[in-house]
Image 1: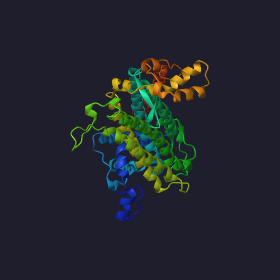
Image 2: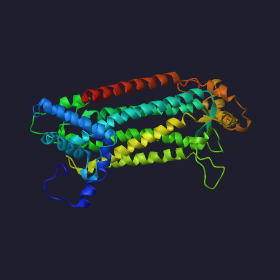
Image 3: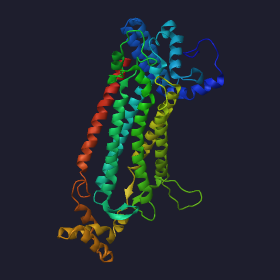
Image 4: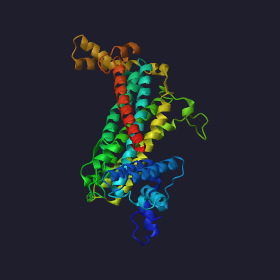
Length: 448
C-alpha cells in the first residue's frame, strides 16, 4: 500500500528506512489511541456535513474492528506502512473504498500523531500514578513498622545523629508524593487537544475543534495551531522531567539500601530471592536490582536531556526531528514502569536488622543531644558545643529508643505525622481514581 504522501514516484529505499526509523513499531503500541482520534475526527466530519450519519457509522464500525484485530495481535504495522496512521487509513480504504479516503479530511499526520501520543500518554500517566501511590503506601507501611527502631543517621558518609527506621522509610514516601505533583502537572499540561491544528496552520473548513476535544476527553483545546507543533517535544520533556524525578527518588533509596546492606553496616536485610550471586565467589549475595535502578536513573536523565535539546534550534512549524521525541517518551515511561513495579515487590520484602541498627547507635552520635541538654540548663550553645567536643570519650550511652521518641517536634522521629501523610496519599488515590473513571467513560462513550 502507498504512503499517505505518495505522489507517484519511488523514494530511495535507504532514505525511506532512515526516515521511518522505528516509528512503525512505536505506533504498533499506540494503535488504539490513533483509532480513538480517528473516530472523533469522523464524528466531527459528520457534524459539519462532510460525511453522512450512515457513513460515520460505517467508519466507526471499521475503526472499532481495528482495535479488535489489534488486541488479537492481527493488526500489524509493517515497516512498509511507514507508521500506524498509514496502516489504519490503508485498511479503511481497502475495506470501505472511497469512504476510507475521507477520514483524513482537514487532518494532517502532524495533528494526528500528537493526538494519538497525548491520549496514549494520558493513559500511561494514570497507570504510573497508581503504581507510584501503591509504592508510597509500601514505604508508609515500612515507616510505621519501624517507626521507633533506632538507627544512625549520616552526614558526609560518617555517623552523625540518631534517627529511626521510620524517618528513613518515610522520607521516600513523602518524596514520591512530592514527585507525583510534578507528574500531575505534566498530566494537566498534556491534557489539551491538538486535533484540528492540521499541519500547524489550520484549514479552510469550519471544523469544530471543541467538539473533538470533548469527544476525546481533553480538558481544553490547545488554541494556537502553530503552538501545537512547538509543544511536540516540549510536553514530552515536561513528562520526562516528572518521570526523572521519580527515578531519582528510587535511585536515592537504592543507593541507601546498597550501603546499609553491606556486611560492614548490615542495617538492611534483603531476602535471598531478590539477590543474584557470583559465578566465582560462592558467598556472594548481590543486590544487583538496586545497582541497576541507580544506573537506570541516569538513563532516564539522558532521555530527558535529549528531548529538551530536540526543540531548541527548530524553526516554528513541524520539523521531522520531532519524530524522535516519541521514542524517547516511550522509553522513559517504560523504564519507570518497569522500575516502579520491581520496587513494589522489593518494598514488601525488605526488613531492618534491629539488632545491628541498635548496636550502631554508639555514644558519640548522641553528642549533639548532650550539648542541647546543657543549653536547656542555661549554657550558650557554642560553649556547650565546645564542652562536649572536649569530652567525647567520656560520653555515656543513651537509650536510643527513648532518644528518638523524645524528639517530638514536627517531622522528627517522635512525631512523624504518619497519619497525615497517609491522608495525603489517600487524596492522590481519590484524584487518580476520578481521572481514570473519566477516561474509561470517555472511551466507552466514543466506542458506543
